[in-house]
Length: 639
Image (cartoon, rainbow, N blue to C red; front, side):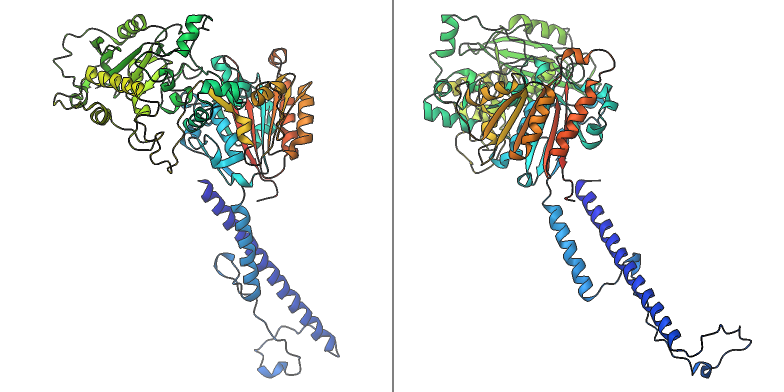
């Protein structure tokens, strides 16, 4: 049953109850009137009435002539389904009451999950569950404050309706608690479990060795913001220095070695190859974009389930620079007896436009459809092929340098076929766009015809992976020779009136989430245990101690102190964040009594929250365990 059908069902029940109440009132009034008339008749009789004996013959009409007559009124009319047939003022009053009730229900904020959100729900079996990311929660926080003005929307996984009717949004972060703790000690969270109906598995920064305060506080720049800061300050590097709103930050899921500071490494970031007008690192997909484009990522939880058997292209990676080598990759697949597509050919092209790796691959399962029209593969080509997927993986691991940039058209599909993961990606289907709408991809054949003046994929024998990878390399090199927004109708100004999902300008630069959230006359309050309050403040002013009047960050000495400070100020701000931390020794043993306190703290904050408000509880996870997020819209006394 959907949310709208549930509301309709509840409304119908309330109508029936109201109608039944009016029905009972009318019947009671009728009974009272009849009783009163009987009493009046008895008082007017000179002789008290005596019960008449049972007649032996039928009475005549004249037998009651001397008795005062009672005027009989019919009982109230009752319609079908026990619904009273209301008329006049009573009918108009009922209509007015229902109209007011309906209007009141319309203005109550609600949250519902979309398909991606449902896939992350704890109601889904573990093997089928696909967790959300902390950035998804971050987008919901910003949307609850400034709605469509937020740089990123949570629409990929949920819908928050009537966000502008919320009094405030309250986020409670429990650091060092995980999904494992909730599932293992659920009986210790009676209030949390029963009150928060939405429960979602979430990949949190602990899974990829990052910091939760940093990742929650930092919002990657959109392409529009990047253009704005570049125009204002000349470059993003200068914006970081001169503007308190721009931060330099790199998020990565992969094992990247910290670069050793040297003049060469510094100049590699600052200088450019002679052929390039801007750094090739500006074209890299960010972690957020890789999630959007369905790239395989080495994330705790997904590696054991969704990406079982996948390998990294290198054990360790180097920091990527403007001089990092680029390699274009394209794969061809055939359908096997499992019903899936499996790798049958791979081609790689280097920057010199040389095919440095090209091989046919024998799938692990029997081929049942060569898909020759698209793959260019036929039965005779595969006759003596012995190289397996594992051999290809080992070849690429040896051949690719640790700072290699992989290029391809919708490269996520190729990496899934290879069962490999790589951190540095340039996707021609993302950086080139003729439609002005980021959700609509332009075919490689069209891009080659429009920008390279070449016809590809025209052979009757099917596609050729070396031809496709060569076209991808040429397209990226052309972009680097032109300018950052060349060939991109979304970022180039075409159809700017169309609202598409925001284009990430660069993964390296970000702005403050709290600053974004208070842009439309909103206020924010952060209370963190120990040094956490100061940590949040750093991601507001970069340590410059700039006084931001509508953002308040304080620290408490203990978790209990944080809860008290939070509850005392919760009504004064539109966004409230409480950050608690559980000590390792509190989680030792099988009897983790601290969880009862956590449930009590959540209940206390809930009771102090006003209606309607959005409440979010985040168990921030650990290195070996994902987090879990709980959502609820408090509307006590509103429905």
